[in-house]
Image (cartoon, rainbow over all chains, first blue to last red; front, side, top):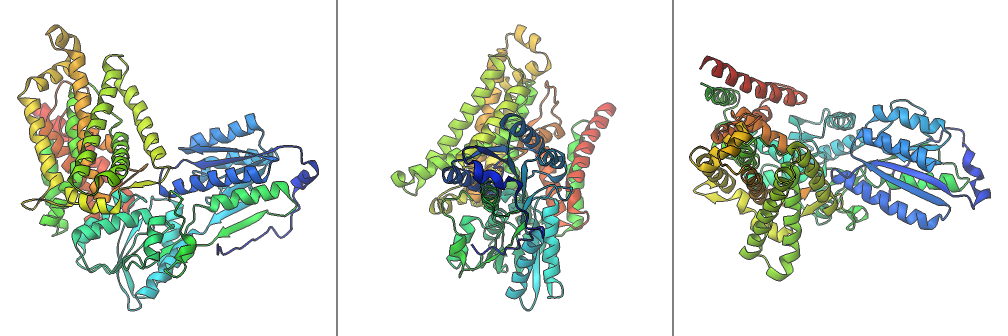
Length: 318
Length: 316
């Protein structure tokens, strides 16, 4: 994995307070993992990697116990975390917050109880709560996508953009993208929310095609949306669209990049397997003296036909 | 009279759409709008009968996702035996229809025979089907075999005399539904049950059987909608059919059917469906409002359409 690592360890190479774990191997320690349910493709992949990692680590570390809970909304996730503390007495919590604001107080109280806290992907609203933050790079995701667009269209051109569900994640991505294409002659002629959903993006793209006689390329900004966009272009029989750029690294689209499909020349990763990084690092922190506190940013990488093989996981549901 | 409200709203939308974008009335755009309305539209016709008979079904969106997932699984599994051809498509269609009828009968059985509140039963089955499709797909996406999908594609994109299949099926469903509602005994029984269950019962109407039939029919129509839906993108996931139930219910109410039951209008439902999908279409075709506000615009138009209906009724 060629993740761009920036381990901004909190300057002090904090020797873990739990480092004493080595001396007391017979004591079982519990790691709670709380993640959103598999309601869309990316989350499905994240659930898959979480389960795989938990299964693997339970064999590697007999002294560790794992509790995995999936929540369909923020309220349920708060309950999950409260239950983990009350009934399982967790020593560490790995959490991918559904939403930042509602999850901040409960995670804060877990941290105050002395347990290790690892936050994944979406940060909390208050800084300094977590011991480890494994972050996806949303502005970087937009930027890599924008840079690829510029490299594909050196003379500029007209593109349309499909956005995700209106959230901070989506805003950061689009801002990064707009900065990258600034001054390149690439003109964004339209932008709508496709909500990271195949059906919505199909409808939006159909309407874009009716509205604009000339579209040179599409930034679908997500692989599920790219699938809808491709179907709409196909059905309209339009040949002015040269390519579609998705994102996230869905296996079907990575496969098409690998096979050299001209409509899908590249993809940009936002790996759901970042949950695995978080669980592994937390386990390392609990069982060894290696310092793992700080921020771990997982960079977004451009997938091209040359390197696509490294990003292709045929067994994953995503 | 009360029939005018939704029609006026639709006409206003068409005029606004045409004024804002010259492509609005192009054949391609009209085909797009009608074809994508077909899923909700076919379901909403069934929903009209359920609501007219004083019932409600919140499970249709999840049910559609579950049936789509089941259909894809069965067709993929049968592929080595049947190969790509008409038989496997017919098998998929049969699975969708049977699963739809079975799911509808189950809802209907719990509501009528066991006498549980329709809202609770279908809220429960909504969660069950949504979870089942997520589980079937392992949290990811179920995709139809690529070759099979190419063969099946014309069911959404092809058509007769330039009219695509979803539009034809939608139109047939509406015609049959309209006749059943306004000319046949079944429609009158639905309205009688919805307006006063006891009176209907004493008038020798088999209340439970008629109600059960409305849910079974709605289930079957969900199956029909799924048959049209699967060839479009060839996939189903946990995000398939989200909120379809509310769109269908909104379309039925905009069209003049009474939410409490007792009166239903199938063609009104069609107007309701067209209003909803045209708003989306117009918002995509123009840059007038921030996309953040799309939902608000939709809400305002839905409420306006129903107010127009009340005003007209008061005057009439």
